[in-house]
Image (cartoon, helix red, strand yellow):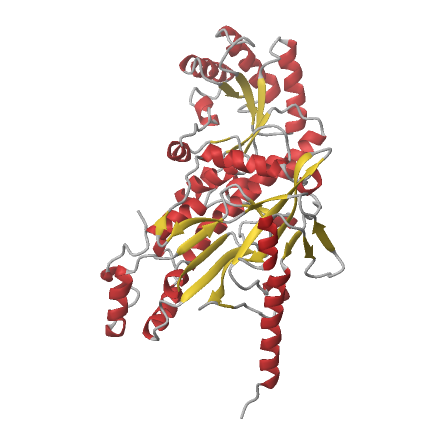
Length: 495
């Protein structure tokens, strides 16, 4: 198996050599992993992948000198190669929980470590987080399009086995009821789901009788399990549903069957066919027979199917989730925010790339609403230990201002709010101290978190934007660095 800690870019190690040879390798650095804009005009994203990041960090230092010699050859690298072969991670890592809902510019992962150790984690960490958060955020969108169950069926379209397994995990965290991927199921202690393909039916010969025989054999060999028959191999309405009803009845399957039963539609006009099939099933006393739909679905198609009154009880979604098809590249970045105790930032030519400096922590502010109960009202990211952070943790009155419009502000009075911190330490001095959660616990955490946002913030199209701000102290720190840089730039001249 590949050691993911070394799924890296070479420049992480060319920079590392410079840090090593100039005596800066042990200088204390803080890096933040965050994103600037959510895909598809979404209001927010879903965190997934931090468990694999923790595992990746633990494997740093397990490669020998021969490995490093393959991409850092030559005598000039000999001493550095020896150092790398023994370099373990000795720092601290803070992360948001998997299933957390995160907004732009908030630190999802913070690494506090010797400079060289923190730097070489950039590429593998982004590889893990960008993949899983793309899938999780898309799965959240698809599942929010309906109140009915959605299963993830995208392994065959995923960008490799690794992507299939962890993508399915991310999809379940963000709302999917099940996955077809057996390895994801086995690794996480959850059942996988699936019944039959068209090849099962055509293996009985291309005939109407062959379809009936296939249905009967499947029922007999899976008695006691959930029975779903695929009915569009030849003609959904003229023979598929007829053979399914015959096979169910001939094998004693009706609404009293404890395992549950149904049919699957995988082609054609799903809205029209589902309504017709529902009427046929009901007319034969099979009101408990469920209708499952697949075929290139995403959140937009599901929304439209439900608008048309489709009689579909659950959905199977493949590549739209597994590859985050509409937005396959998630935008997490990994930036240095503090070095040697001094906050630093990247200014850049693009305004959106201006980052928040310093060692940060995010608080989610909670208030009780008389109509909707406990709701999240705002997020504020502070410098750890600054005055706003102290006030929040002490339950005192505090005010947050919109960074772009100082006339927009919100005051939270003492005694009217609660808070929770979004980042938690998972690695301390190189040791894994993380609290372990099962996949279903992560899914439950996501479901609970989502329920505390207002309905307008959860909608897919033009969502109401949740209040996300930074503390006055963080803003002042950023402005002071920018002003100093501007003065230095203005004074800079060529001799």
